[in-house]
Image 1 (cartoon, rainbow over the protein chains, first blue to last red):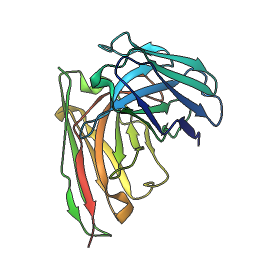
Image 2: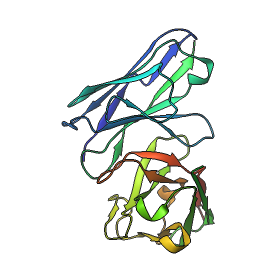
Image 3: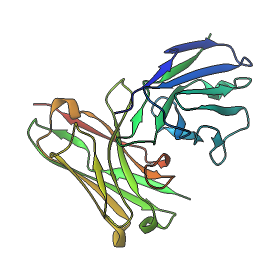
Image 4: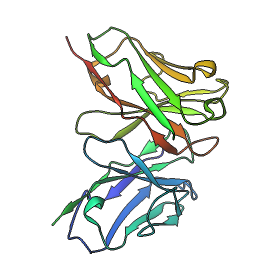
Length: 107
Length: 120
């Protein structure tokens, strides 16, 4: 099973700042990595697929990068609605696995 | 508009059974593989099971293998999760989700989730 480790666990930032979230895989997942956003009481929403492709309707301030074992989700100029929990997920091997999440909170 | 609506959750005793349903609309259900993902209270996301578009392939997490069964009815645009021999650790919100990519998926549309509570 591929283990995904996300860091930091919590990121405290102010609106307008840049958020940089990390996801590290226990073995290479090539570019088969997705990012999701989840707000309290809501289902997750797909943000980025295959490491760097924005899903339909996702604003350009969200970007993904990386390959192999190290990946980054960047949110440029945080908007109030961006404060949420973010998860990475690999689709390189069964079973699908998710990272433990990074909470982006208002400082 | 793509919609996924789960139902069938509730309170079940340890060792009991429950059947979850996911009703899909707004897309050609029969051409997409589908998935169940769960989230224990206050915890992260855990993939549970996936089924291919024609039901030819089914995959399960080790934690539910042999106890849960995924199925679908393309004529009814519905997917199911039969949960048997449930345990306290199966307590979670269960989401159905559509596969975005082929083979091993990422998940582009999710239902609102249904709560399953396993307790005596």
